[in-house]
Image (cartoon, rainbow, N blue to C red; front, side, top):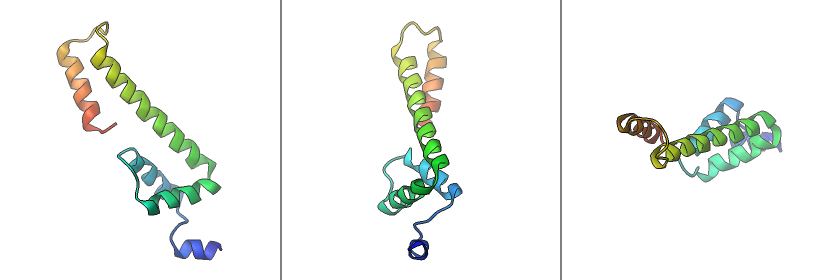
Length: 93
């Protein structure tokens, strides 16, 4: 069974998993990458944790961005707010 999964390239390293996890922040993953992650998550708690942490960080950055844009009580100049929002948007968080 394991040999068959290796031949199908469904068993990946943590390094490969971390790249795919990072790509998942950019948009939906292709089916083969989703399957690779599912198989990897069956054997690797560390990558499950990394996936969760990365998505938490991404959500936090999005929240900061929205807060800066919509909260009038934040004591930043309009120029500073614009620069921060532009940097966050350029990174596709």
